[in-house]
Length: 253
Length: 174
Image (cartoon, rainbow over all chains, first blue to last red; front, top):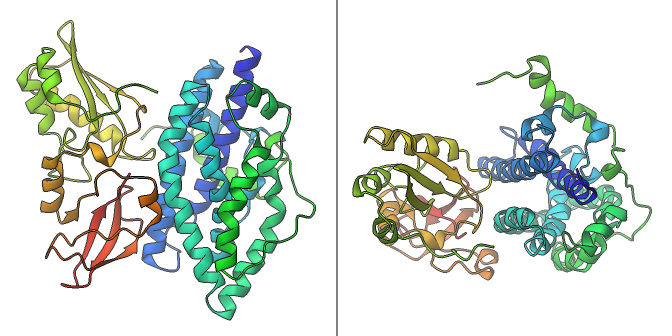
């Protein structure tokens, strides 16, 4: 791979690993959500995200040109090679934590994809154009739940407020620039993460206000997912997700 | 971005020399999750072309995670093979992204027959953030409410008619 292809490959892993891990987390709710409609909703969102993952990792495999397809990239890399945001690997916790994790992510995911539809890389732009319409529904859904829980009962408010407090430390990573992002931004491939923060705040502030929640002050932010330094939770996700293809290599339906 | 962002047109395929039997075969291939609505009326078939006697069908997914794409590809190849077009080829493209605006009037009528309210036209971006109140496909009343924006398949949402009290599905604006 040339330098530019290496950069694109690495960036596609960041995108694809993030949607892959969040999709897996959401799929853990299947059969366990508080109501059948919500079960269906979370699994629909998981399905959209796994579809997006396949497009990113398939494209990454073609860019790499080393014979790895989407399955090889998803199933045969270890935690240190995963490039997902720390936010999305956090455990489901209670329903409020799942919803808050989704909301904080969706509110960034939408402006990110809107920017990527104008990417100078045609392959990335067309994936983003496909995904952006789905993510509008995701943000609408998670926003509605944040309002309902925040402005709901004393108990639901307490839980969603706790979730916001607990997950806030993982939001800084979504807006942290690094050398890879700067090179991609210079070439018009991807937006600088820091440039998305205003749009993110514009998505979350009105919702938090309506939900009677206060945005936490920005304290120390936990980062490292993009360098493969993950929280302990990722290993357990991969152990479950990768067990079958590793135990039975080349298994086919 | 490709320039071809409008609805595909079978008349253009005919004009380009695609045999009528090929189009007839495709009109009989339904989306497996929407039996009674074929892949042309849903806007999934983007192009049909002949090259050296081979049929080449270009399709596009409705949603990124649509699990029916492989089945649709298989059904298209089977439908063509049974009519003598055995070495047909199916190609999947993402661009331009599928929109519910590509569903034909025939497709809308077929959805209604399935008890699914068709999507509103010209699905503007703002529409996605406003509550969608489709007409009830059973009694026609506009007095309906949304139960959930997510339904049994990616492309549908769940609603309830406040007039006849029946629940129903609607095709999501996309």
